Length: 99
Image (spheres, rainbow, N blue to C red):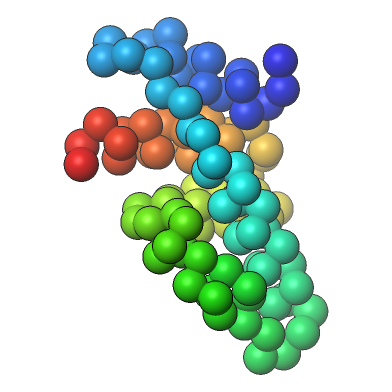
């Protein structure tokens, strides 16, 4: 079981309204991560997902705001991987159960 599956499994043990599966969010996390890391190195760089509207077309709200809130601290080195994954999965599950 990988870290993402572990975070989802942990969440689902406490979830009464059916299992949560994050689906393609990890693809969005990859785009966010790559864009942030490149933007740190190249002045005025606009990440591909921003420049090409992927956040609107492929991963509508609240995905990006939750990724930024929960994942960016890991990228900055202020949060461990498992903690960031757990927060993101928890927040995504909460957002999906309250449309």
